[in-house]
Image (cartoon, rainbow, N blue to C red):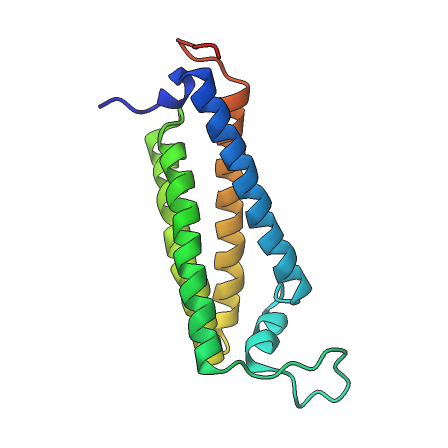
Length: 169
């Protein structure tokens, strides 16, 4: 089955539906990133402090306590499941774009490794393996870069490239 570039040949109403879905998905993803910024987990020290607490820092502006096991398992469980669905759906759309196979392969598979590295890494930071905070930071940045790249490619091909056939509403 030839699927490379299939996105460009879909009827206009399907392309519009997919474009709106990707835009709304992006709003949700970037809202999550705003939350990450609010929790100050955009640095290795912030990652460590968010999960291990800062009770010993008497000068801290916001007092944070080490998260409990139940809370950690909930965070990890919900994020791995939801991020997997986000990248499964986005990856399914990326599969239909017109791109070189190798590049497409990276865009659709790498996020799943980043999900495991990011949220598995958070668990290891919580368990006291502090060097993993750097892996968490790098994998989170890579996951976001892949998300942005995929969204830009998909929206560009949905909204600005013309395919061989185009149905009207």
